[in-house]
Length: 115
Image 1: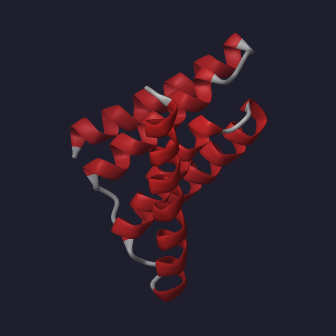
Image 2 (image 1 turned 90 degrees about the vertical axis):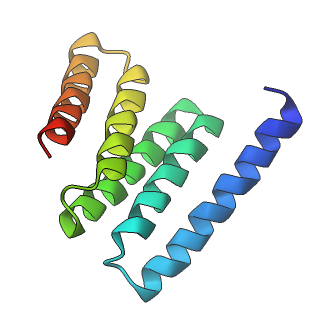
């Protein structure tokens, strides 16, 4: 991708994050909004340093898990949560710890198949 398109993506997902954060203040039980917020954080994590990216991914995982508490069988939320665990695993240098994160991703995807 070129720099302009990266910048456009950054602006788009930052706007989505801020919009979702504002919407959460009005309705914290909106699973669609929590999923959008988690997805935006996951996308924004790609533009961060590794330590900041890990923090942002963990925040995304938290939002996505919160969405699943409201609406447990949301396929788009489960898919995004699986991607978040995978992204976090790729940023983990310790192989055993990374394997645990990949196993979480696998269990999320398996759960999606059951619903």
